[in-house]
Image (cartoon, rainbow, N blue to C red; front, side, top):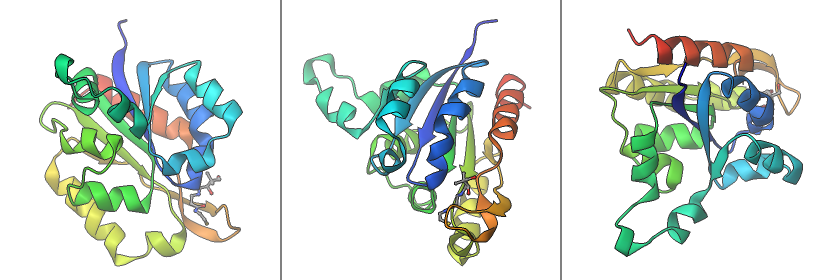
Length: 191
Ligand SMILES: CC(C)(CO)[C@@H](O)C(=O)NCCC(=O)N/C=C\S
């Protein structure tokens, strides 16, 4: 089976510590390209970076600017948007959720999303944040905005469990096996 092309967006939630095992599950079914925000790198060790790069191309914001080659007239965020069949943001931080719900395009990941083709390509959002952020009114507002934008936007709800800081409550990223299953099911069987 020729695998579909998936962009995995990593953002500045502590759930990015799950990136390596999540990527292992995703590469079984997809050609994966990782787009990591600068904040996500706070949660990726040097060994994890090497592990990720052994299974996927990893782009960061500097790649957009180092690749500015006016002659080639190519923009990395547009090339990646064209390459992808679907996009998964896992984890999606409260900050990234707020930015995409308001059309901001201030880094490589949000620029790809700002250029996204919602008619033909599915987008999966797996929020992960502290319960206090999850319960804040902006979370529902921004998630509803994303759902209103297109029927091809799928929210993979967080779960309640012990959070990084020891709190117990909603906001933990969905289990990576459930994320991988949902993305594979929906991306290969568009409704
Ligand atoms: C970190 C992980 C993946 C461990 O299972 C889980 O707790 C999670 O998704 N947390 C995201 C929310 C969080 O913890 N925020 C930071 C401060 S509370």
